[in-house]
Image 1 (cartoon, one colour):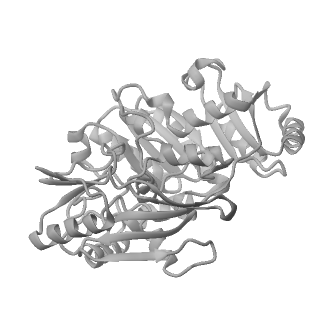
Image 2: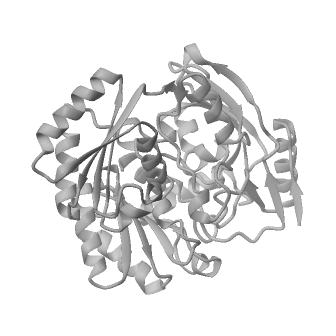
Image 3: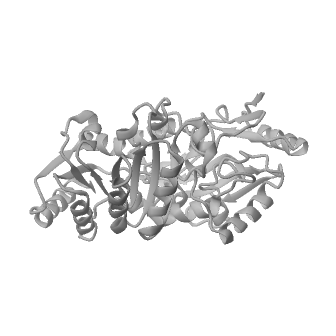
Length: 418
């Protein structure tokens, strides 16, 4: 096995041109923080982008940042924090869940997997903040899309197409993102003791109010103790985050208290304590238990998700918690093929959605569809896309599905709708 470690876009281009000419598959890696997601790859060679690093443009006044694809996300977030800015979409770090070292994800991986966090309801995901990319297709052709200003829309959809492609269409070499000011004040209002159904109602009321809630999550009983080191107890916690200028946050928190005061006991959590809670929710810390059980990520309508979970609990042992007002469900359950079929069947029964197997052993990931299977018409479109960008199937072959393995279209739809 050969590992190629290019340090320039030209070297990436040369490597892929060689692989295309030899029809030799490549595993595409940043730092490997999400290597355990998707079907196991069987490739002789690896294209490691961890040395393709560096911030190439940062203009805080213009709210624009460009960087090489292998630049660590943690490095970029430190730079943004020093300037009072952030990625508003709050990209998740999968490393704790997958047993890796936190902070190892790369900025290219952020777009390739369309990362987001609890603020997804308000800010969207990586695809909604990308301004431009430079990449190399599986044909061995370099291309650019978008630009460095928000109003530049040349090739904009092509930049978004790279989101959630998981390295199966092209290898990103440079990315440009929009950044935004970080909130001055953050306060979380916790409602204690609610069951799942009551929590969904409370979150819907809060999101429908004028309080401008930026995040809403529900941690059932016992799951709450796995967040923030258990400092806030084990009683169920329905969490509503409010961000902005200090006086505005105080006013909006009081409005939420008036609206939800009868729902259950209320608790205010401010500052760093609030940030710790939402980081742990973002990174699925409640299930970062060493990998003993499979972890699924389910996206479906918030009004239906808790009904699906209840039906699932009637048949198998499962732990669950909710983000995105209940529309994102994290599930921890046994590794068992029939349970995967059961889960996807219940999702269809309760209105539809998407289930992705995020953590499991390699044999388990090889035995079933890790990403949501596509209906025939989308599968045909995905196959044509793959054929256009990577006709010899040399980029992460089979990671998303057997064969050509590009589930870009359906996964992109899931990401945009959830």
